[in-house]
Length: 104
Ligand code: SF4
Ligand code: F3S
Image (tube, rainbow, N blue to C red; front, side, top):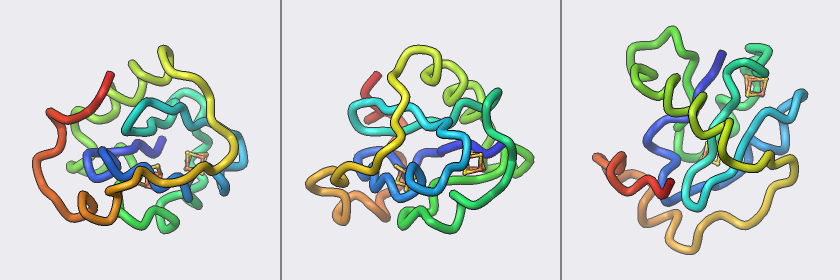
């Protein structure tokens, strides 16, 4: 499956949501996750993300994010329509080390 990684935090552009054929995104306050058990590996969401936050779990950068996506997909509501990005999304887009800012 594909997973959402750190770059999404505090951005949440949501372009990914619109294109997913199986609606497997789940929404937290400042981050989205993919349910890795529902993702069909189509890959169409990956190039849509302006923050380049989406990767296949086979890539090293995905690392711990597979388990994080699985955990929150169980806790957060499903999202199928794109809403507005977070207010400061463009400011946070290229910031490193955002993992600690993820709102649970
Ligand atoms: Fe949805 Fe395809 Fe992205 Fe998986 S890879 S989350 S199925 S758009
Ligand atoms: Fe996040 Fe990118 Fe989707 S910033 S909400 S993974 S379009």
